[in-house]
Image (tube, rainbow, N blue to C red):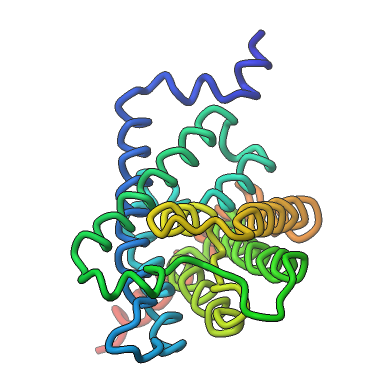
Length: 266
């Protein structure tokens, strides 16, 4: 029974204060993601939005949101990330499902606020609703979104590897850059969703569900594949407590010698 509870992640729900804070953080982050990100996709005066503007907006908003809530919820902000973490056992099933639910609700709320705060003429652009470009088949779109999810979760696993502490300071910046790169490369192909919740929110508000499965299956399967590949093939080797102690001991000894030399100087 204990193993069953551990697999489902029931124990993670015992601290109700922590779980509610985490769910609130994921909800709020997706509200802001869809509001600011989808706002950058909205056409003004009939002019198509700049692809660079869209890429920078999504990359920067993910960077600042991950930096803000990473200590509260892990900064998933994306069902594909949550699915990857569930596949590798970094988050329990129940908690992961709750994350995905609030991520979708947050994205929906963000798109709803964007619609409420913009003139009706701008709603014709779809308010950031992700669609396949003309000539792209659903299978091709699925492939594009698969690799977008794959690269995002691969980067997340790499920069958040507990055995790579040197990568920690730049982790959220690298994640934001991965999002920006994905948009720069493929926003003209599929809208570069990378995030099922982000597409869900804008699709519901625009009431346009064409090929919507692409934006769930692609990023989630890509994210799960990347997470499993990193865990079983690319994870940094465990330094072990002795190696870590030795590293800091050597550094301390060098610092003490430097101070001794300075003390002996007249």
